[in-house]
Image 1 (cartoon, one colour):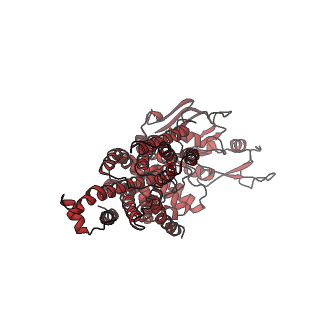
Image 2 (cartoon, one colour; image 1 turned 120 degrees about the vertical axis):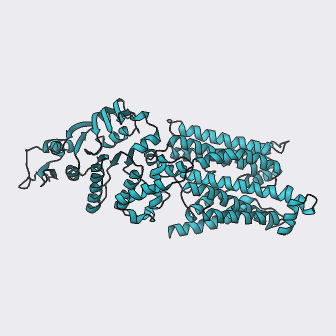
Image 3 (cartoon, rainbow over the protein chains, first blue to last red; image 1 turned 180 degrees about the horizontal axis):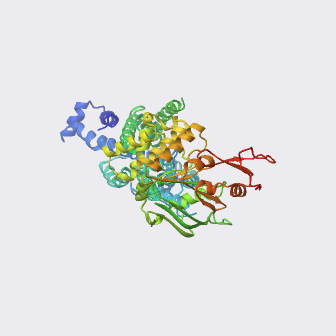
Length: 323
Length: 272
């Protein structure tokens, strides 16, 4: 196994141990270990039913955002692309806010509605991008994403302003993201769904290397540019849509993590995608751990933490890149 | 190897066809240069030959088979291409960049094997960039970068090489190095097709030339048959004088308005 991947895996394992141990009831690693093995242990419930699924879900979502960011950056040939750029966050936010404003009866109504909103935005952006011809032009894709996102955000703001105060707070909290609703069930649903797009993205790794060179060069080196682009765009979008539905909009993971892995390890996607997956997962596990422990008993939205940590990190990277 | 038969390409909304009835063959071991003013259809000819645009009429074929019938990866194993421009967004190391030439010879999940590494090393050596393997491509000079791109095309292990203005913005030494490289690759058995504005180098290095004007073929043949004062004056709408170099190849010198050719240059009196 390549050394950078091994280091990232070790970091991820460390992040997970911290994530399971830290919380309103602090647990030493030995207690965590006992709780994992012994069903009757007092710490067992906290460890097995609350913290382990939460940490695993954060890892999987973070990993998904990491590879989606990396893949979309290659797709639109822009290091500033992130998984929400293509109108997804707007669509998902609108779906969620509409569901919250309607005072949902079921706990699944909000994520289902957010997912529907995100998929709707993806479909609309895709449709707009291919409308002028048969080709999927990355520049048009970016532009469509921005306008669809802006439109959805405007409608969402209108809905928020028109709804009651308690719903308003719920909507804001949801939009900022969090894993407090994590359970084995959400983990199972998300994992079962995510495995297909993640598989497609890994499968496209070598084609993404060529796409990052530009269309004509990729074409002459033997890539089926159009097919790869559609496959990657749809996989990344549907994966991001599911992660938004699961835990809201968590920014900066999909932007900062691929950037850091590209610089620290390799820009080739056979390394970058697994690297961004493990690093993104570890980053989000740590961010979630910070979110629920720094201002205890108040839990910060994890999106606030990723931005608070991500922005300075990004600034440092940017400075080094320029220098 | 590469063949165009009566090739005509029409872009939507354009008044005249971008390419109008062009026929051309490039055989293994042969270097063919395409010249002509800006907008004369040179790049369109390449794009049509490589299946990037569909002809309105006529046929583009590789190994006798219409280029549209080739799968992308199949074509990449037969023809290597160096395009006119390539912007780097995510800079790779030279060795990594050249390894991407092996894409069409590797499965989607396969790691490069010894055969691929040998092909890359060989391509780097032939293009005289072997020492640059660990350098980042955005730190190369213009001439080095062009040779690395040729190396990447060679790593495809193609039987034909197509280059679109490969020496644009290169200085004399890098220009000469690149033409020498293409010539030696062609003499080694590759079919080489080069679009270029360097009439005098095309004249000395190419076996045959094609002169295009407004999408139509003006002359096709040995450089001495194509680079005539009458044809060039008409096509470029500028006075030129022509003298023979010691190897017999015609060398073209553009004249200033009203200027007479220097002694030793032939003058048919042709003026635009």
